[in-house]
Length: 429
Image (tube, rainbow, N blue to C red; front, side, top):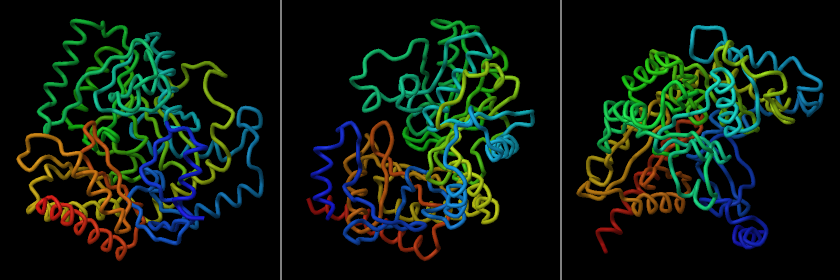
């Protein structure tokens, strides 16, 4: 069986709404390498979209899952609870930003975590409105779609969105939107359309993920915190893509001097198993009545066991420091390429959550064509890359934090050769 044969079957079996960036069908994976069904090897700079920060099949995580599977795989915590669920909540309560008493609730997906954070904020405040930001991504459920600041493909064709959701621009200096511009838009919203006393929550990503890997400026985060305090609004940090050492700290908000009221997390939480959580101020988390939160699979024992191992690996292998080191190496290489490649408009990102943005050579417009060409060229050479951004002109780099030095060096060589090859083809034409 080869990739093409499976792809033909896929067309007849899977809904076309399930988008796929490649038609490479994985057979096995180890740390930062993946082999497809044809035996071809790839270096993985996607990590399942920041899910396997600890690498594919980390032995400590595999052992934890195997040990738990031998005991039991499911009871539903709401029916027959288990101690390691409680223990993981205790650990996350300690790790998340904020010097206050916290509590945690486990669910299954990142979108569920966002939905539940909004539910909790509404229960706590007795209000309904929610403010989000342009370019943000918060999931594909109806509330997640409504909060997400990008129409295609996430909202297209799905009808009316959830009501009482408002968007304001996210500060991106490269695109001409300053912190003050965003704050002015918030103030205008409060003056013209929305009484702040009706706002339950304000949600943002400390580094926008699908939107283009734009870090939230520190002054912006401080001002959002001040606005939330002034008006009694719950501040939600969506750390689903930024969490678990990716940005050089366990959570991206550890890099700011203020803390959110609630933090949503998923992706890297359980090293590849489906697990998500909302963690935050105990007084807010306890607003929902018993039965109002949870789900049949929320806090599945296998995911809980994997997450304990993930947290151990992050600490034992000092993956926060490793993320900073790897990100520095990547940014240095990208900057050296940028010096001779005017199409690279920006290189950015904390830790190992790094992006390169491509514009036309004169800088006048986004360049999604070159971005797609670089991704395709790298794939043909054995390097898996992801693109993102509202204009599709950003390459994002999300390799496992456990990638060995020699494979990292090999990947950087492929990346540079791919960009040069695309440039050469453009010049030839």
